[in-house]
Length: 393
Ligand SMILES: Cc1ncc(C[n+]2csc(CCOP(=O)(O)OP(=O)(O)O)c2C)c(N)n1
Ligand SMILES: [Mg+2]
Image (cartoon, rainbow, N blue to C red; front, side, top):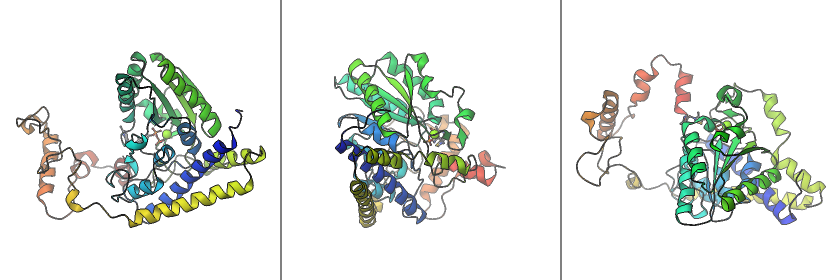
């Protein structure tokens, strides 16, 4: 077992993990009260992987994650108040209240999001690392993604370019054993995920993601290789989410005992105990950390509650659409003639139908929004559960 760092660092690691835990518990509560909208994916149980990683990054390094990233932003330095305000859809949210839980973003702290498309952050990570290379900066990009994302096609594409161009990027699989309700054994032919990029020349290793110190040491080495040797590597951290995939998960794919078994290795409890036994932190300090987390989360909720909703007439700001367009498709305004993919005549029927439904919706002052994806052929005969699951993107 790796040695504990100095007392101040231990205090900081425990404080951050505790804050993220309390923040997410409260986010779950606020979601139940319908204060937070959209989807909500909690990473409760995964705090050691998140905090251990962020703790060895430099301020100028980039972190990019998935849709389960409230904690990642907080660990990078984003004010929890602004993360909570984002969940509430308020103007003071870190994405102006427009992104919600899945699209937390904070360029100032170099937390580059927040993506709902599984694996969608991987090529962007390569792009960030390529930008560092172009500018001759020695910043490193840390790319965190789930076990399920390692099956996405762009996983291979990204690994290829990262290795080929020797990009300063570090890949970290947060293996929480499931992609939604599908276990690693059922979704990945290669269950040792650390080996999945070997064919591209990217070495991998496996780490206990419930041990904040083990994560720290391993990530520090991966970052060093990326920064100093331009060698991208892949780390698989074993971790676990105590809560469902999202707030609406009946959890029929796992047993209560399995969750309890992992809770016994709780990253916060075990680290606090270790610090206490080693005499690095005292009972008083641990209590102070708990109270501090409680207070910060209370303030975050008050702040979010007091922040206004974005004004209605700002609805079309920051969107890649014609401001007068009633359609759902993006239009390139650089020149007046139609661009590839914009010419409705050349579109297949289904796409045209979608665009027409969008136009019809745009012209309607009120009433429910027509959704051809749900009322059309695609869902015909599907069970309501399957339809609900399809919504959970
Ligand atoms: C490209 C794409 N396919 C499918 C989905 C639906 N989906 C949302 S989360 C998820 C599971 C991903 O699991 P994993 O990568 O292990 O991350 P975790 O949720 O466990 O953190 C799926 C399939 C999606 N959002 N994007
Ligand atoms: Mg997973």
